[in-house]
Image (cartoon, rainbow, N blue to C red):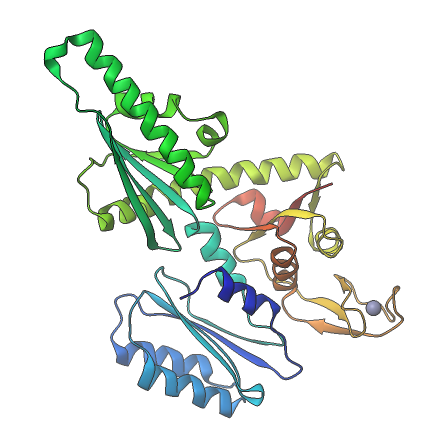
Length: 347
Ligand SMILES: [Zn+2]
């Protein structure tokens, strides 16, 4: 499974010989058609041992579960990793000295760490979804609400139940490091539940679902992805505006490849924003791995020469993820398309 441990291992791995990275989307595809896609992606790549390893895996081991598969191969080092992914990715191939992780950053960003609470008058169910998979669910059941005890007291009972559900939710979500919360139920119950959350958790609520307590987890997941994508666009647009404003005041924001690379290797980028289609080359020092956007003859830090790197954004993504920052791959945002790459800084 593609968990955080696996991602960290990929982030850390590097080789002096090329590593082949492949992402293959299999959504609604027959084996014939995704094998054809794979073969056409491998065309023109002169890495016979890695190609053989990849094809062997797809032909004999691949179980066709999930919606995509990510494969990383460095045959000369006996390195081979394949992960099934529960969400769709774009099919693509990449060659470099590190596993290509940008699509993974994209998946983590769009589908990582969702908490869902379905609430009613008496109890609640909680779900934790990560990268399109249900990781854990729990439920609480409060006191049964008796009508006979009168309108006033049954209202209080509902309030108390929803307050207890909210307290349980905060513990559950906190433990899972949830970054986004969706709430399902009637408007009235949602409002009451939300009021009982702390300010921090209120700010992490990104939307509501029109699902009842009895919804099955597949429906909850489908709704979550749908509502989550819309909320995500809005949240990202806010971050882009914040970054542009901060960069224009030279306070805690940077824009453009040169400044972003500099901030990234100083470990100052808290949130890296990259336009989905941004690609630009950059340079990496052969000695100390210093990154620059423009070619220099010698490294100002160690005096070594530079090697051109075809995808500088990938270098920034890796550096920021290794430093514990967050990477946002921004889609369909005109301001971000103009900027290409930028970031919000820690200091
Ligand atoms: Zn250097």
